[in-house]
Structure formats: structure tokens, C-alpha cells
Length: 179
Image 1 (tube, rainbow, N blue to C red):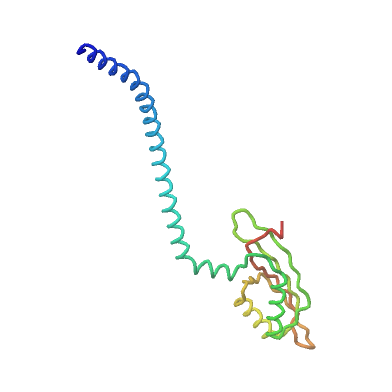
Image 2: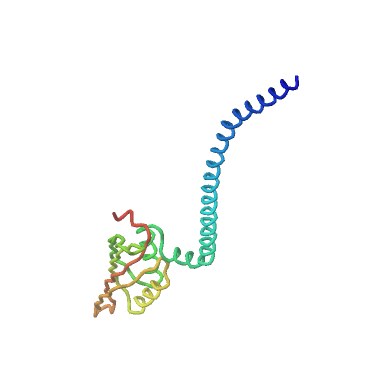
């Protein structure tokens, strides 16, 4: 009987070793795969942390420059609006005592490396020298920004009124209407 107990113990140990080896080896292979996956996840977590830090930096920079961006957006409109500019020109002319005879617009698309497009404005009108000077002062204070490029003037000796032609430009960001 003692012999049977020993044989049975040896048999159970042998069977358990034969069963343990394939199961343990399969789990060992999974462990090496898990180590690879964990290292890949660590890299992903590190990259996400860097991305979050960059987003925080951009948010802080945006908050610091928020007033600058608001000022720029107020001066340079996002889209071209000839109707708005025309009504603004008419209001300025009326306030300063000028008469606008003709206004022509021509869009110039965004050039490479520039952040804004130009809208060329040609204005023909009449008024006194003081009224013209007041109109030019209003252009400087106007929003959207109007940049006067050239002025041609002639005077009518009988009425002492100036006839003028002004070449100006205004800026806008979106030039999809000009393409």
C-alpha cells in the first residue's frame, strides 16, 4: 500500500508537470505581449500629456492676446461687404458735407504670405476743402479701416467746390468671394 501511495503521488506530480508546462508557457507568452502593450500605452499617455500641455499653452496665449484679436477683428472684417462699406461711405460724406457722385469697387485676392485681401475703392465726389479734409479724418477713424492711397483734385472757379477722385483700399480676411 505504501508503494501504491508513492506511485500515485509520483503519477500525480508527473501529470501536473505535463499539464503545468503548456499552461504556464502560454501565460508566459501573454505576459510578454502585455509588457509590450503596457509600454505602448505609456508612450500614448505621455504623448497625450504633451498635447494637453500644448493646448493649455495655446489657451493661455489666446487669453493673453484676446484683446489684440478682438481689436484686429473689429478693424479688419472677416468677410467682404461692399454694401456695408458703401453705406458707411455715404454716411461719412453726408456728415462731412460732401457729395459722392460715384463709387466703384474691385477686389484684389489674398497674395501668398498675406493674411488679408484688399478691396480697392474708387470714390468720385464734390465738396469744399474743409469738407474733404473732414471726410479724410473720418476715414482714419472709420471701422472697417479705409486706407487712402491717392487723391486727385480740381477746383471749379465759379462755385469754389473741389471735384475729387480718391483711390482707397479696405481690408478683409475672407477672399472666397473674389476667387
